[in-house]
Image 1 (cartoon, rainbow, N blue to C red):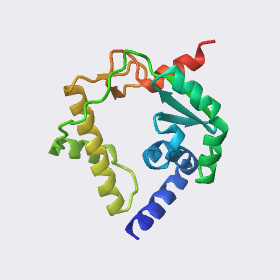
Image 2: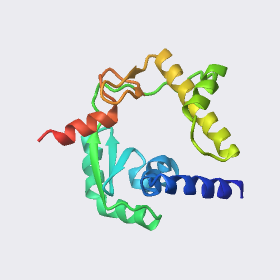
Image 3: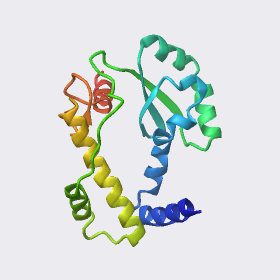
Image 4: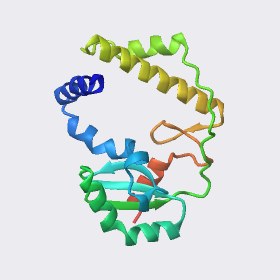
Amino acid sequence: MAEEGLWKTLESLLRRYGIVDKFREQLVVVEWDTEAPPLAHKACPLYVKDKTLYLSVPSHALAQELHLQKEKIVRELQEKGYDICDLKFSVRPPELASVPHLLEIAITPEDEVWARNALEGQELPPRLRDRMVSLLAATRARERAMLAAGARKCRSCGAAFFGDSDVCPVCYVEQMEATP
């Protein structure tokens, strides 16, 4: 019940800023671990753009296999309520490393102060503000832990990621898409 009230508050905030549709569009990425069709569990969702779900896969063989099952996967996602009309597959670049399983993430008081300052001027209900501060502080602490564990920042978008490339997987896919 508390989640429903939080969603209503969050939804009204998203509507105010005109981004509720963008938020809902990206939900499939967030919920992939529990909502992915069995055929597509080895794929990693990157983002949704123009009703196309971009997936990263570890091999060309899997990309081909999923491409052959694309219509079935899209139909299953649509049956679950996601507004997806197409899938695009990208093979992960070989130099990408896997994420260490145990990151020591320690949220400091400075993280919380930074998060409160980041939300300065935003009209949010107190409970939502507290949750957003917690989320932002945890995100900042996670990035710091990732960088300490050997991650790097993407030269295109600034996101922290693990790997030997100078661009994150999302920017890599966008670059590959832009190359004729």
